[in-house]
Length: 469
Image (cartoon, rainbow, N blue to C red; front, side, top):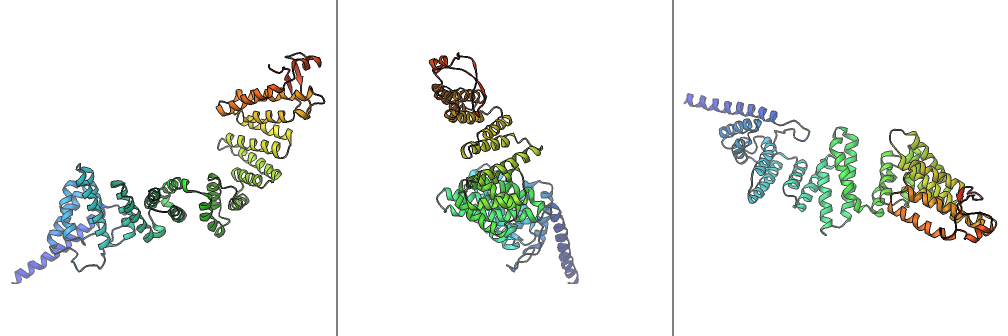
């Protein structure tokens, strides 16, 4: 009797020792990432023993599957793992951490589509059982959403529900990929007519708040959250109406009117969406420029003053933008400089009637981008519009059209853009009809082909041509 009792005690000790060793081995098999740190304390949801009703067999299968798993011999690890899953589910959380890997291994090895679908269900069951015994529902629901996205991509409703539950539970700790899956599934459900478009705005707003919080407070997570943020913003663009954007950003602006990162985002998104007429854009732009004056904010201030018809002030900001672009030698800003000079030329001509200044700006734009003919189109338009003011008789008032056509020819020759070439050709054909006729030319003592200096502010040498030339 004593011998039997002693043997029983030794068996129990051996079981507990072996279980402890297996537990240590299992911990070594899984990297201790923040998401997958093993928690051996199970939830109090069952009276079932930790090692099941057959602890010796449980430990034996644990040892077998653990060794095979560490050797990445997943095929041999499956049977002992499956036995543990059904018979001692409380033994270790690694049953579920490793079980997800083994389930996906079986899925990739299987060719029968029906069996593959059943393996997806198995994986979801593994996750549900993990939640039941070990908790961490927010994290695990996120893993369900991520794996379903890959293995059953058309299960959009389930992806949305799993990811939504995960985000609701985890809040600012929501996983980066789960935020993206949640937003993408919401977009797909809206496109299918199963949700209102307002949901997209709500999910975007929430995702951006969570991502911003993680980028600010968890800099080590940047590599995960920045790609999700960029992809969510791309998906959101079709829904980025001015009304939606203002509704999202106005409360943020009012709460943090001097946050440069927020101001930069507001101005960037509103400008991209064509919402520059909204007061929010004006306020954010002004605050951003006051805090961090740079070429882009100076340019935006110029655009803002232009919209408000403060054209002289607009030119000051554009001049500042040009200076800052030119001082920054880390990038090639020729396109931005060209755009700014051309806007300045247009404002000087059409709004302020400062023709000489407008021409100066247009020529500067041409220097920034010589292969774009639009500055010459503008100068030609100015010359043609000045014809009646640049002469003291019928003949001299027609000579400005020679100079105008010269600029249209330059525009056509400089540009490969068919639209610009077409506009230049149309103007050449139109204003050539206003040249002096042959009789007027001879009457004033000139010959065709001679040089001629056009009067007034144009003050440019051209070549005499007759109407029809």
